[in-house]
Image 1 (cartoon, rainbow over the protein chains, first blue to last red):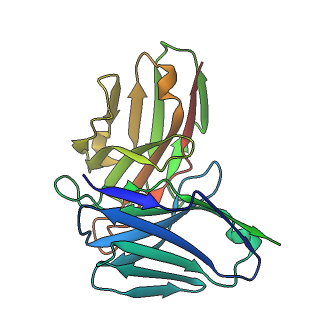
Image 2: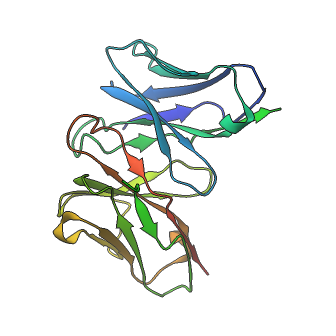
Length: 115
Length: 115
């Protein structure tokens, strides 16, 4: 079955630096991958979607890469700010069967940006 | 568009009691999902509706769990004879059937504590 790993449970960085979060997956080739942000006590909020034929996607200070050979996505936040502190989740569609839009989530990485 | 609304935000119950949660999706969204999230984990898929039809249920959803979406609008998730292991955040999400259908919009969740 598909497996998603977000390598770091927690990441602490200094304000202004670039945060890089990793999402690895095994056992299949997803058509796309998504990243969500989750604040404590709230539901996840969609950030970016990248498709298998896209190498990189950007949105303001966010950048996502998708390496289908390495089966890995990197999520970057440049010029990080304390307000970026949150848990970041990667999510993938199912390997086969069922709703194409039923997502499987990683455990998330808790990012803390220190002032 | 007021986003996905869930009620109640918090529910404390005693083991063996029945509980019901409500989700109001974004009005034009025809797809509705229920997820469950425990501390330190990503959301786990429970069930999916397209309009009023329940199209998929996870094996996580025991016979004590039932979900409905009458008339394809709001949805309810009922847990009968609650157990301590049911303590979790129950998240509802909705999505649109057209462009951008892969993106899920989550509510703030219902935090269930079973004593």
